[in-house]
Length: 131
Image (cartoon, rainbow, N blue to C red):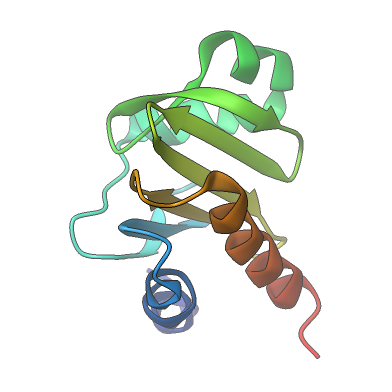
C-alpha cells in the first residue's frame, strides 16, 4: 500500500460505494501490482490482475476471452485503452484507468451498467483533471 492508499480508500468508500450503484469496488495500482484499496470482501487474484492487464493491452483479446474480477468471469461489452465493461448475467463490472490508478466497480442486478459506468468515468475524469 502506497501513500495514496488512504486517499484511494476514501474514493472507494465515498465516491464508488457511496454512490449506491455498486456492491463491491476497488482501486488497482497504476502498474497493476495489486489493490491499493477495496470495499470489504473485494479481492483480486494475480490471475484476475493478469486478465485485466491483457484485456487493456488487447481489446480483441478482451472481446474474445472476457476477463475475470474477483474470480468471476465477465463477458466484455466495451474495451479500449481507458475502459473495460463486463457483464455476467445482469451483474456488471466497470473498470476505468487513470494515470495514477485503475478503478474497478462491480454492480448487482438492480443497477443499469450505463448508470454505473457514468459514476466511474466521471470519477476518473476528476482524478485525471482535479479542478
